Length: 451
Image (cartoon, rainbow, N blue to C red; front, side, top):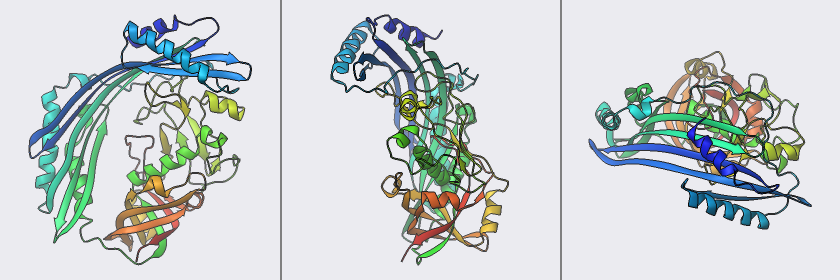
């Protein structure tokens, strides 16, 4: 049994009478190095320990839940949090659907999501990676005039969940990243490019690849212009496609559906996408940076098919949203740390890969626009109506090849239309930090607003 789970079970012993208690305990170590002009500009190592408590009391009209949290595991913090949670429960609104998770018989898969090398790698080596990343970008092209945010970062995270309803779960994960932003200049025209390499441990990182990626993205945007408005096929690169998948995943949350905040509501069984589109949320795939053995309520994570060959199969649920929908949890509770409460959400989205690479997709598209970055996603996308209108930078596609760079343009459609207009899916699957992996995707009938 993990030490964190022992802490959680010790807190459960404070339960009174018929009240139910859920305890979420977490600890972590985060390291970040930022290089500037060959020197360490910023170095941070932070250690955190804490817990969150939820206490549930049944009432005549439903259950009341009180929450509290503390950034310490000492006895005084536990006593104070229990008192605060009980007090908060008296002010909570009764809800007939509120409940804590109970074991559902689904066994947890065995995943290796942590690497001891994160902790054992000397700090000097981590610093050297950040400095080398900056050096490679600065010296990689004469048009690079500045390097912003040449970073190395990693984390070791552990968590445990226990409840009076029988939940007992603990898990650990690690991650390491290098990232850099390059600024290129040619004749007074500044353009930026971002490079990234990610893994479970420092030895999995490719500093040279991250540097080359940032240089290429910055320099190929030099001379970008604002074109005339037109309609075309847009090819989204893996990073921008991952953003699209995350947006779609948000609309596939059972919580969004039951609250009337999803354009997928009441459409299960319908063809909502092209037959080449199969979208999964699969936290049991260890290649995904969002992989996990257990969800945010301590239920075993599982593979959920959301859209299969274009047909909407279902949504992801936590315990409460599932009760509202009259179904069962899909082991898809997510929570934002010790201060957060569980909610339904996707954590490891991936689109089933196609059979062609990005170069072949460009060839098949012929003429269109290649989307390299998205701007204003939060304000330009409405997950209820499906309206999609965001700023982008990228390059024109001419005769199947990347051509001149373009900027200050807006691409627009609706998410409903975009899913049905997917014409190519790439095999260039890229595992990225965040809730979605990405690969190149071509979508037809995109309106591009320029001059």
